[in-house]
Length: 82
Image 1 (cartoon, helix red, strand yellow):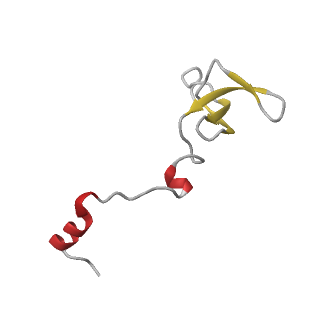
Image 2: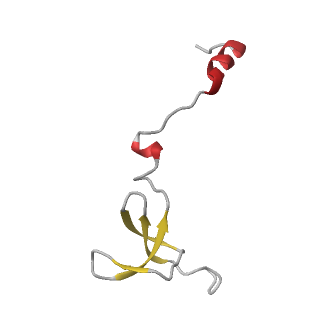
Image 3: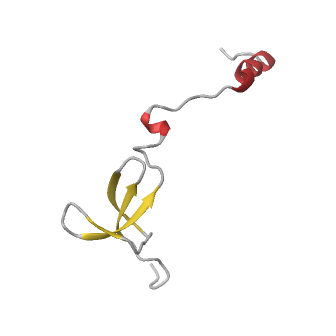
């Protein structure tokens, strides 16, 4: 790799504010805020609004919205493939 053209890549804590969940990973993102992690070290923390812990798709609370029978209308129009 060429020197001095890539951003710094290091440990960062991502914190899901909705679920109160945090995980340590490596990223190029940085932050002025820091947090003390379970290992006793201090890492930059990036607050996110949603993660796999709070996203409806991953938690199983996702709903399929069928406005005005669009699926049935599509199947009537183009036929069901069986």
